[in-house]
Image 1 (cartoon, rainbow, N blue to C red):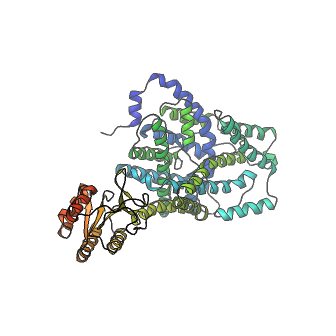
Image 2 (tube, rainbow, N blue to C red):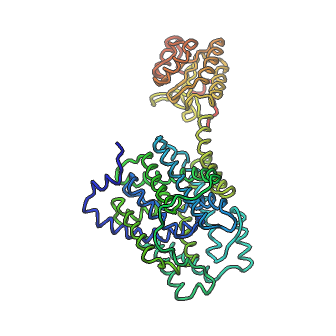
Image 3 (cartoon, one colour):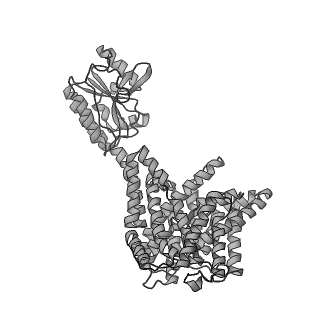
Length: 575
């Protein structure tokens, strides 16, 4: 029976949580409103749609979301993706109503993807982006957002496509004297206020304080008369339930963007949910989170909203304010409804450069320069993956960038499977077992036998490397009588690999060398039996341990351990 988290919450709600949830909801609203408006503009949409989105996604997730603490809403990481998907489909001149309809349909498509994936139990797709590629993607996204918002920060517009063109246009406009001094003062001052308060007074609502100061400055100094664009009065009231009017020809390009948004949104939600759940000693379920995100996106899309994601910063605000359940989000949604119904002119005098400041400070939080430096120090290959993802976003755009990030993550997995680490093992004095001769160059060797380890499943992609190395070992002078494969890391053998191993064993037998397996896992051994490999490999040449194989060889040949340096060292390539 399907359990609806919202119903379960009502049934189990404790009275002592109420005051904390209400207070946290009020505090959360002070962040939701300015960020919702700013991220709507980042997505190329009217500011009011950010408030509609905030309301509906909070209510949708409160009913179907499994987490008690996550806060969903418009997000800086999705804004450029939404803009890149929607704006090319908007007719020249930029019809706002069509842009809203397209963004709403985009949210519905993301919801459909999430719900279908949840039913199919595909929560693992959150792992399609590795951390290094996600770091690179977010660094590229941060730079893209920053460059895109700089013109608005200084009070002018740039008509350009792509990061380099936008930056060149920005530089040209500044050189041509298009900067509006008052706008620059508000925008740069707003960034300074937010950063200073976040650094030195983190408990204060930095964004709200900056917005209040900007509104006050607009009224006192007549910023509109000085060339500064203002948000203006928001539409009054709440939108009706609306099925977006979108042509069939728009669905395919929207679907392509929806897939990328779904992957990023899920990855962000899973990482944030995991972080907060671990603090409370809880486990998360990716499939249920997908259903919760899908419900939030569907609710948003049916009420003139756009796709959403989890916000780590807003979740932290609610958590630090004492929020215990999703009632915190419901309170926030209710207060926003009251504001747009009763006080639609509250943000009339909010300068546009202040919204740009909100977006820019959010983009700075996306960037992870220390993480990039750590990758450089710890693993250069993953650093290069991160840089490739960064360049993909910066040079090709956010949609191409997310595709590159996913592709690089998958290719990195295949790379490790294609070229796994492989080595020869030896016996080390005063250390039980057998160990890598690279790590222990003084390890003893047993004449006539080579102990070889292959650290990956044996599949079509890497079996040539396995065959090549075994063949090389068999050609040493003198050739070994046994090559013992320490097979514990071999967790699978596919049919292609089995055929090649069969041919390899027949070739080795002709040369007087036996291929021996030790520590094969039972499921893998059963596959080998099913493939018929025991018709060529002697069934007696399968041992439960490497020690057992070596003892059998010594009993058969009388071989004695040889100190290191007696035989030529065997160096193997490895990745």
